Image: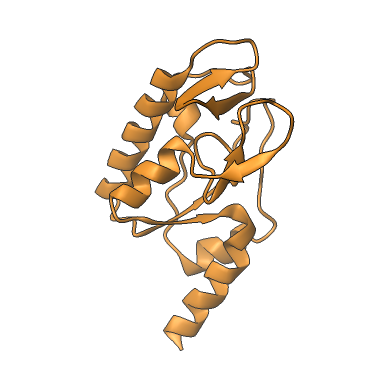
Length: 141
C-alpha cells in the first residue's frame, strides 16, 4: 500500500490507492516483515517447496510465520478479498518466480496467497486493482 517493505527497501504504491480506499476498508500488511524479515533483505524465491534467498539461506519459516500472522489479521478484520503483490514468494497469485533467480515465472502461488485461498479469502494480484474498483462500483449500482 506504499509502505517501504520490499526486499530492496522500496515500496509499490498503487496509483489507484485513493480509489481503493474509497471502495474498500483496506487492511494493509506485509507478510515478509510480519515474519521477521528485515528491510532491505536478500531477494527470495520458492524452490522445491522451500523459500530460499539468493544467498542460499532457507527463509521458509519466516515466510510461513508471516503468512499465518497476516491470515489471522485478515480474518479478524473480516477480509473476504486480498489484493497482493504479484509474483512474490509471499503474495504471488497465479504465478511466482521459478526459484532460479533468472526472472522466469511459473504457475503457482506464494505462501501467503496459498494460505489465504485455503481460508476462503479471494486473492488478486496488484495488477488487477482497477478491476476490483470497477467491480465494487458495479456492485453498489
